[in-house]
Image (cartoon, rainbow, N blue to C red; front, top):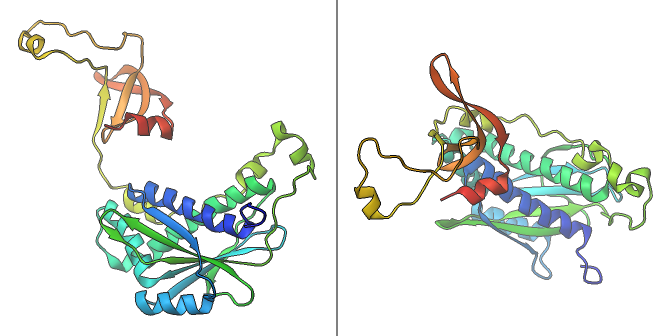
Length: 286
């Protein structure tokens, strides 16, 4: 912290932590609780790595470079137990119990999280950020600021990950220093997105065969029990939706889209007009 502000290195660690939660939620359907904390006073990265690796298995390190002032790199270290358990959550959501895919599944989780971090950094520094990362032979050397990230679920706490930041990351400039910053309404798409397409997904292919229940809702209504008992053949129930309002497409008890009813070769169908936002989906969950 500098003068009460989050340091650039701390921003990288905390932003990665949040984005890791987003990716795990999207891939596994459940968001873990994630606690990001600075290393205890006096503890070196080497000592921390040895302690975590000794308890939870050899650490897999990944370095992700950012073309930003100070040339920062974010290093993610995951002991074998942590990477395996994270991967198991994703594979389990896809109905798979194959530990042989744990390593590449974990790398998929990691690369998606870092791709999101690149986009977030592009927005924060308001500039083009190209992705660049690779597996490293070991922990970074030299001056390093590092944090531990502990994921946990209701049924289990996972071993910690290590997030280390090397280089001399600097805060974004406060004053406009380019046409991009002087015209907030005209920020280029590459700066807004970080111009960093997500890496090709390997784990996502595992989910494509998962079957989900799909239904269409024309509306709903609540009736007193006495009125329900009066229903007979020919009774009419008035719904809470007019005939010209769109119907809702529901997948696994969650509204994902709205559209109009059509007839296709003698069968009913729905022409999609709107895909609901993530926030709306959360609000429709029972």
